[in-house]
Length: 386
Ligand SMILES: Cc1cc2nc3c(=O)[nH]c(=O)nc-3n(C[C@H](O)[C@H](O)[C@H](O)COP(=O)(O)OP(=O)(O)OC[C@H]3O[C@@H](n4cnc5c(N)ncnc54)[C@H](O)[C@@H]3O)c2cc1C
Ligand code: HEM
Image 1 (cartoon, rainbow, N blue to C red):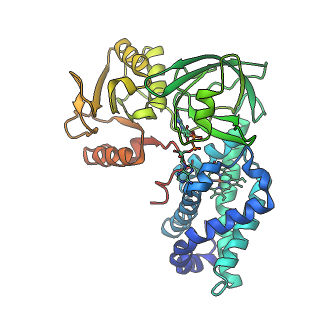
Image 2: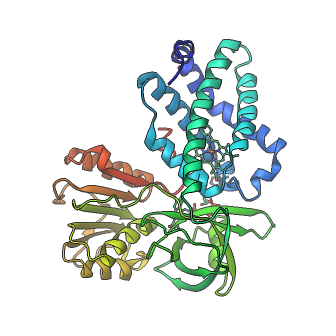
Image 3: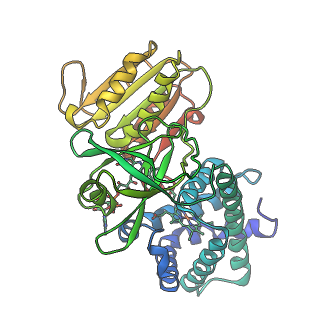
C-alpha cells in the first residue's frame, strides 16, 4: 500500500509521468545497456528493443501499477504481477538486478522530467518502484523455490524435429544430463536459449505443446524476419543439445469439474493443445469445447494431436474457423456469436492480441465472468499498456 505521504503526490503526477513514460523508457534502456551491455547477451530480446515492444510493456506495467495503487489502495494487481514474475523467473532475473534497473530508470526519469521533478516526486515514485519490485522479488523467489533444481539452464537433446503444419516444427527433447526435472503444468512454457549466427545469445519462450509433466516438446512457427525461430528451424538438428529453463507460466488448467472452453488462433494452439492433452490423458469427464481459427487446414500446427484428443474425450467438441473454409468448418475469423457456450465455463485463450480482445469481449457479453477468462500473450504483454 502507498504511504499517506506519497499517495497525493502519485495521484497528482500520474498523468504527467504516464504521458512521459514512453520517452522515459527508451532513455532508461539506453542508460542500462550502456552500463551493462552483457544484459543484451542472453537476457533481453534484441528484437523487442528494436521494435519498442518491451519498452511499451514495461511502461504500461508501471503506469498500470501506479494507477492501481491510487484507485484500489488496499490491493495489488495480482494477475499482472504474477504474469511478469513468471516471465522474469523464466529468464533467471535476480534480486540485485532490481537495484541496477532502479538506478538507471530513476536517472532517466530525472533527465526527462528535469524541469518539474522535485525530491518529493522522486521519493514518491521510488516508493511505487520498490512496492512493485518487492512484490515481484517475493513472487520470483517462490517460483524458483518450487523448482526441482536450482539451475537456470539445463541441457536437453533434440530427440526429434517433426514438421507440424505449414511453417511450424515440433521439437521433442530428452534430458542430456541428470538434473532433476520439474513437472510442468499443462499450459506452461519454457525459455529456450540459442546462439545466433553473429554469436549473440538470445532467449525466447515456447509453450510446451504435448504432454506436460517431465517430458518436453514445443512447437514453433517460423518467423522469417525473427532471430531465434529461424535458428531453431534451420540450424538446430536432431542430436544437438540446447539449453532450456525450468517451466513457468500461470495460464494453466485450473482444478475443478466445470466446463472448459479452449479458444486459439494460429500457433496460439500450443498451450491449449497441451491442456487438451492433459484432459485426454486423465480421461476427464469435463465438458470441453475446442475452438480454433486458422488461415487453412494445412497450416494448423497441431491438427492431428488436437483432433485425436477431442475424439478420445466423450465430453469434447471441436469447432473450426478457416479463412479458406472446408466442409464442416466456419468461414473467416472466429466469433462466439453463434457458439453455444456451456454455462459456468472457464475460457483459456491464446492467439494474436486482436483475436483475444475480440473473443474476450464476446465471452464477457455472453456471460462468462472476466475472472474465468485466462489468456496467454506470445510476446511482451502490450495489452497491459492499452
Ligand atoms: C509465454 C510465451 C509462449 C510462447 N509460445 C510460443 C509457441 O508455443 N510457439 C511459437 O511459435 N511461439 C511462441 N511464443 C513466441 C516466441 O517466444 C517468439 O516470440 C517467436 O518464436 C518469434 O521469435 P523470433 O526470435 O523468431 O523473432 P524475433 O526476433 O523476436 O522477432 C519477432 C518479430 O519482430 C520483428 N522485428 C524485429 N526487429 C524489428 C524492428 N526493428 N521493428 C519492427 N519489427 C521488428 C521481426 O521481423 C519479427 O517478425 C511464445 C511467447 C511467449 C511470451
Ligand atoms: C519493478 C521492476 C520491473 C518491472 C515493473 C518490470 C516489468 C516487466 C514487464 C511488464 C515485462 C513484460 C512481461 C510480459 O508481458 O511477458 C518484463 C519483461 C522482462 N523484464 Fe522486467 N520488470 C522489472 C524489473 C526487471 C529487472 C530487474 C530485470 C533484469 C535486468 C528485468 C528484465 C526483463 C526481461 C529480460 C524481460 C523480457 C523482455 C525481453 O526479452 O525483451 N526486469 N518486465
